Length: 265
Image (cartoon, rainbow, N blue to C red; front, top):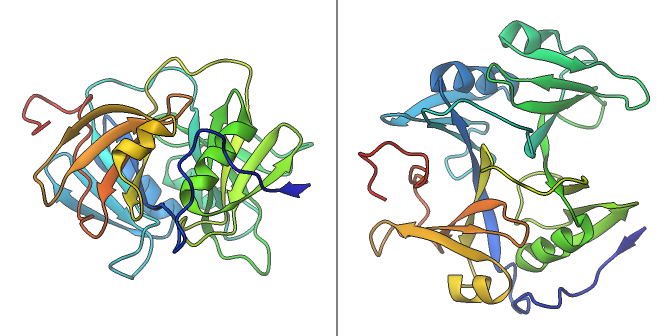
């Protein structure tokens, strides 16, 4: 069933478009070259070093493309469940190319017709068989949620999207503010306990951080100059994300809470 409804606490949607738009995701890694090389191969992109301990997987030839992954160096190895992951569509029905690039199979297709794989540092993700009308590569971002419907409507209000409900799960779609088909919220019983290894970046096109906080976000920190300000926030269920001023997005700053002491945060 597909429905839409306003989020009670969220800021009202602007009259001239989405309040924000996605501009990439960050993935923490101990071995950034290994993880970056894997995701470049998995997404048929290229790996670019943008700063010490910071790499970018660019999945489009367009310089302004937003379906990019930033690989951020951290000292702490991965622990706990993967609560934010991307889903990819395979180039064929086999994950052989991903396995050769360093993936491991966590679950083969069964009742659910897709693979669950893990990258070289154990970050789980789903890999779907190819379809004639869909290109290979990333097609959705998936977030574990206690209340998937509430999360979807909250983000839909910021991204000018509509919500598709499927049982207890929900997804944001129908908006140019995300570079993929869906932003999916998957119901899970357990609350979030640890910092997410994968976080996303948004550009604030028609909203400021005060309105985000009024809508239910929590401000965790900020850094940068007036021209390149970066805010770190958490959504109503604690998922960390970065916000950048409209028109000023360049390279996302390093994660303020996991970066080494040389950080500018």
